[in-house]
Image 1: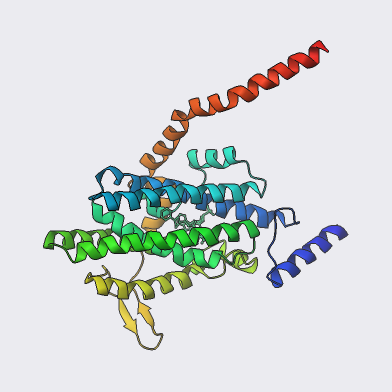
Image 2 (image 1 turned 120 degrees about the horizontal axis):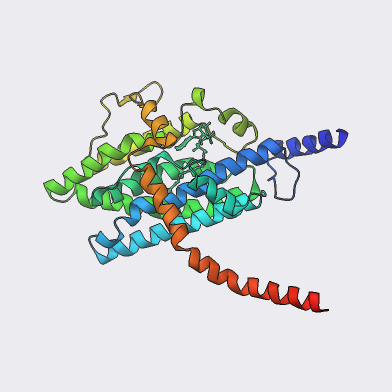
Amino acid sequence: MEKEKDLQKEFDAKIDAETKIEPRDWMPDAYRKNLIRQISQHAHSEVVGMLPEANWITRAPSLRRKVALLAKVQDEAGHGLYLYSATETLGAKREDTVDDLHRGKAKYSNIFNYPTVTWADIGAIGWLVDGAAIQNQVMLTRTSYGPYSRAMVRICKEESFHQRQGYEIMLTLANGTEAQKEMAQDALNRWWWPSLMMFGPSDKDSPHSQQSMAWKIKRQSNDELRQEFIDKTVPQAEYLGLTIPDPDLKWNEERESYDFGPINWDEFFNVIKGNGPMNKERLKARKDAKDNGAWVREAANAYAKKKRKREAGKQSAA
Ligand code: BYC
């Protein structure tokens, strides 16, 4: 008991001093659990996030667009891998983590449960979804758990390229024909609100925030990040000549920030419960990928199994 208290004190001192917590360091169980929850959900989001975009790889309008989109989707797979590895440093088994996703037990970002119906959606995802991701993830480069913070540095660099490829698609469409501009506006209309929801419920309804901020896992609150994202993104929409679909959006001189209309939290909670337009398809695609890859895993394991059997045979003969 005394020893536990000393370990807790040492942990608290490290958090205070901004010293990273490393895999072999002692950490409170609740800190470990909370990190596994957040990092694994983040990993699932990266991997499920490949699906709506992959939908357009074969239909990208030019070779240049296709190459950029392919690179982006591959980057997301890489992000998933760094993050699954980070959960393993906390003692989580990757098989269990992935099974939690497939069983619908673990969450992944609300945003990937909407369909990508036109090419402009690929622009809107890069601009808004990756833009929101950067807004949230830059603070995570300073998160208190070492492996997570180091993974986030690399991820943020890649997200920055993703955001630009999306904005450039929007810029091209917004300066194109009337039909192209309409397509860009329609994509903005559909992706704006779900993008704002990506930051999570408002601070008063966010059960994990207070403790996560005290442990310096999160460095800014959901509402703070959402507001910063809006303030940055509105001028970008103006530059495109597009209209943010919020009649209440208004610059507030006093706060030097935008006021905005109410977010439909019923929609958010419904989507993260598994009832969004694409939840079932997304999970099915992930499960199918696992099932269809079974033969690869079997082949990769075959040699190891054979070797084990041979060695067991030698031992029993000896
Ligand atoms: N979607 O107490 P709260 C990407 C859940 S991927 C679904 O505020 P927390 C990209 C939350 O899990 C973007 N669920 O939680 C990839 C919790 O439920 P549980 C993903 C959400 O953790 C490919 C409950 O609501 N980014 O960038 O303190 C292509 C209460 O919430 C969401 C990350 O994962 C949501 N949006 O704060 C392009 C970043 N929000 O677990 C782009 C890392 C909340 O109790 N994660 N919930 O069942 C975080 O920073 C934090 O986990 C969050 C939520 C800010 C998201």
